[in-house]
Length: 282
Ligand SMILES: Nc1ncnc2c1ncn2[C@@H]1O[C@H](COP(=O)(O)OP(=O)(O)O)[C@@H](O)[C@H]1O
Ligand SMILES: [Mg+2]
Image (cartoon, rainbow, N blue to C red; front, side, top):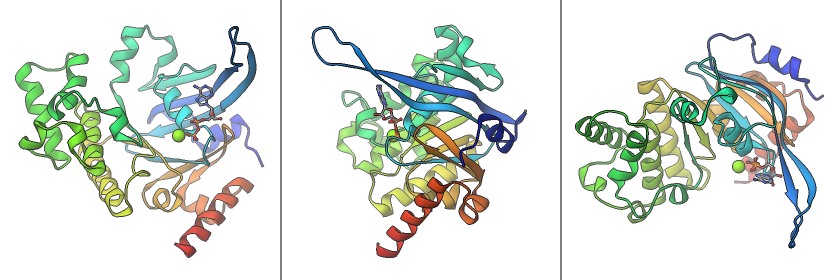
């Protein structure tokens, strides 16, 4: 069964005025070009295909799917890092696709992202303090003293202290680097945090601690979270609802208990089977 857009909207609870983020019929199509002196378009990749979903206030929405199913493209388009080929994206009821670049930059600050690979997302030339302060400067938030205070507080919340702030990201372990990336994301007090495979590259025990940190921060700062992962056990543990992406389409979206107990789509069942198999043989 493939759910049509209307069906998904119904399952997603639309109209949902409590939603902090709403995607309606969003598609992202990439054009692949041939190599050579005069590149020619050879293929349209439908990375995200007519996806509708909403993220409620304080909600953790999981997005699962295999490699190449469109998870990262969905995150990028939700933040308007990627422009949608079609569709509407509303953040706090503001239609993002209609904003000017300056308006978009200001509005988008309410959405922050933590990537899989912190090393690639942290500028190695800056001190940790500068890395975390940068978004405040870019968005002209606070006075110098206030910025300093907010950076110290953000670092403290992720478990780093003053001496850490003077180091450079590359001097830290993967888990600590992810803490720096999280401090950078929360320092602007986002309403939505996207975690795109944020713990997937870490050792299991370190990943578990980072996950606990994200949950603890969410309790304190009250942001909603779109949690992208291929780890179905983690998603089951922390998410309120889960959406399943298959070849760019959202084939199923349900509350977590229902999805894991009564998966409707064949692809969801395949994913769950594979996860159980891995668990048994881990
Ligand atoms: N910038 C791009 N140009 C062309 N194709 C892309 C681009 N980014 C992603 N894709 C393709 O879109 C599909 C979805 O990719 P992605 O969103 O990264 O999936 P996932 O995060 O689930 O692995 C893949 O087939 C990928 O090769
Ligand atoms: Mg990805």
